[in-house]
Length: 355
Image: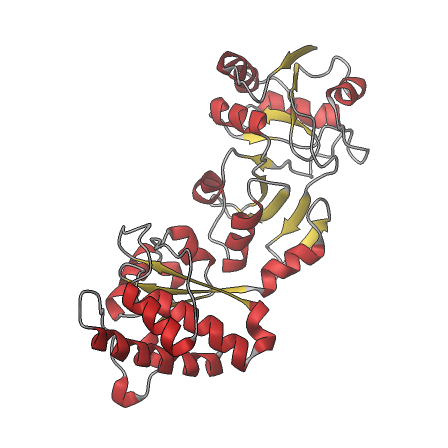
C-alpha cells in the first residue's frame, strides 16, 4: 500500500495527477479532509464501487456520498433546484464540513453530496475529472480514521494509496442534513451543530435590486434595517437585508446624494459600501426580492424563472395614487433624489407591516 506526501504549501501537480489517475483507473485512495479521512473511488467504475462496499463491509442498500471540488459544480451538475434555505446553507458551509442529502438532477434519485475544504483533496478532485464517492475511512458503523496511520491499521493492504499532508482539522465527521424533509432533518450531527443549522433556517434573506446598486437599492436596504430595528426589533435577527444591481457596475461607492439624505434625514452613516451585481446564487438564496422597476423584476425572472412568487416590485407597497416604478435619480438634481427617498421610505414602512 503506497503512501504519497503532498505539501499543502507547495503543491506538486505531478503528485496530484498521479493520485487522480489512480482514482480514474479504479483504485481506492485514502484522502484527508477537514473532518476525517475518506476513501475515494470513481463512481463510474463498477469494480471500484464494489471494492469500496467490500472493504468497508457496508450494506449495498446504503449509498455512498458524492464529493466535488467546488459548490457551483454541485449546484449545476448534481442537485435539483433547492429552497432558498438550501442555497444559504451552501453559501455558508461549502466548502466545509456539511453533507447535504437532496434530489438529484437525474432520475429523481436522492443523493448525498459534500464539498470538502481541504486544499489537497480539493485539488485531487478537480484533477480527477470523474464522479467520485468519498465515504469516511472506516469499517461501517465503527470509528472513522483520523490519520494515515489509522487508515493503514484499518485497511492494511486493501486500498491502493494513502495521501498524507494536513491531518483532518476537526477530527470528527461532517454534519449530514437531509433537505428532502421539510424543512430539514439532521441525519448526523457532526462539526456543525443543530443550533447553527436552525440559525440559517430562521434568518430569511431580503434583497433589494435596482440598476447599478449605488442609489435606490442601498437606500431601501439601509432604511429597512433602521425601521425594522425600531418598529419590530424582535424581527431584526430574523432577516438578512442586502442589495444588488442588475448591471456589471461592481465596486462603486454609494451615491453622494444618497449618503447625504441618509445622514441628514435618517441619521444613518454608511461606511465601506460598494456596489455588487446580482448573481444567480443570490436570486436562489433570497426569500424575498424587491425591485425598483418592473423591468428589473422581468430581468431576474428571465435569469431564474424558479424565483416566481418571491420577486416583487416595490411599488406594490405604495398607495394606489403613487403606485409606479421608483425612478432612477442618477445624474439628476438633488430634489429628484429626495423625491425617490420619500417614495422608498413610504414603501418600506408598508413593507415592514407586511413582514
